[in-house]
Length: 100
Image 1 (tube, one colour):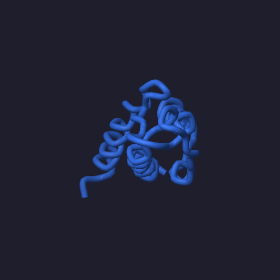
Image 2 (cartoon, one colour):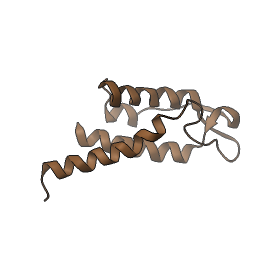
Image 3 (cartoon, one colour):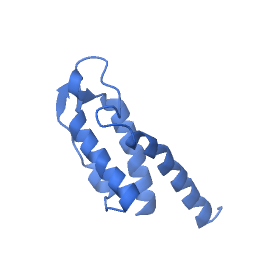
Image 4 (spheres, helix red, strand yellow):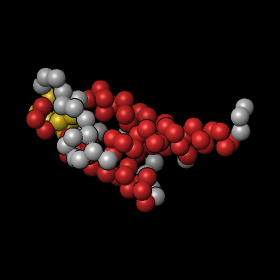
């Protein structure tokens, strides 16, 4: 309705909101779970580092790769809460699909 430029502007705005979290130090990109176990933080950080390479250097990554990634479970001291990670990665997939 508003043209391709407006659509791409929206994609760029969504991507920009994702980038701030990528600049956080590994191990501090998400909060740990309230109790018990969560996603292995090192594995999540490795995927986020691939996203940094995508945004900064144009290193290829596809939405299907992000969507199919699984993480091992880890104790609270070495993990991220699953819900926020899942929500973030859903937004990543949305942006990647928009530009694929």
